[in-house]
Amino acid sequence: MCKINTKRIHPTLLYFSIYICIKWNTDQLFLNVIFLVFFSSVENVTVICFNPISWEQRILLVAPLYEVNGYILTVDNTLHQTDENFNFVLTFDTSTNLPMKNVTIKIDFKNGVNATYLDDFHDTMVLPMQYSDSLLYSTQGSYNVTYTLTNPISTVTLVQSVRVWDNLLNTTLSCLSTCDIVASAETQLTFGFINTPRSGFKFSIDFKDGTVISDVGDAIMFDVNKLTTFNHTYTQSGTFNVTWYVENGEYNVSGEYTVIAQWRIVNLQVSIQMSS
Image 1 (tube, rainbow, N blue to C red):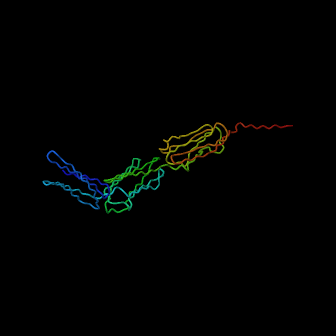
Image 2 (cartoon, rainbow, N blue to C red):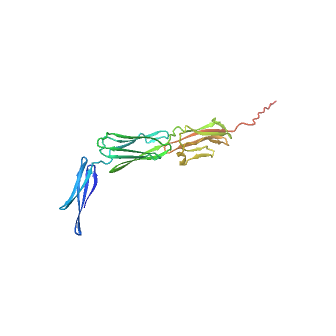
Image 3 (tube, one colour):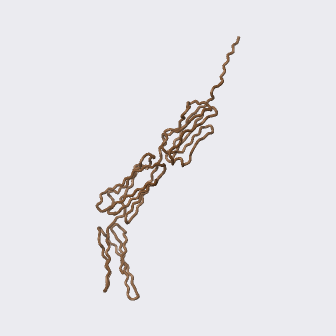
């Protein structure tokens, strides 16, 4: 019996293990012959095992092959808003050793979107070779985009981290109705955030009379912005420096809004006394 085992340990170096079993009567002898052979092109390797009365032949087609190499993964920016596209580019540059034969590229963008490419990287393939993907994330958060590159003898995993957060730097709190600097006590004031982004954000408003309105849980950041307005009535006179802040996973902004509450003048009576 003659059996051939092979293992590639270098793009052009092949490990041959020829296993031979010799039997006579009830006895048998096992031989394992090892060869290390360099190949620079496709070759037919013929192995013949024989004895004085018989022979056995095996033919093996051997082709030199490189592991996946020469790749560069880039992204235009690692931070975008939910209305901006990320542009990913995987490049096999001119330093790539060929052939790599059938290379499969599987991409998991971690938002339910996947992509797959398959190409034959043969000896005469024109380099550089690029794979471009443009993607918009509609939900804020951090994503670890995974590229898996495989060919018949190797697997490579690449991870590109990106962040998706809407800009809050122009967001501010404003009084939207009955908003003179001096307001009447017991008059309802309406406040709201202006210049808000598409997505939600954590917020807190302290009216400085013991009333605080806030939502600082993470869940609000992973939905669209649903904030409307906030109504508040001061029941006492005074100057109130309303403080507020907004934040998400990337931005935070804070500020103040001054309200002066005064009682209205009512039932004013004026009398004139004449002296003689």
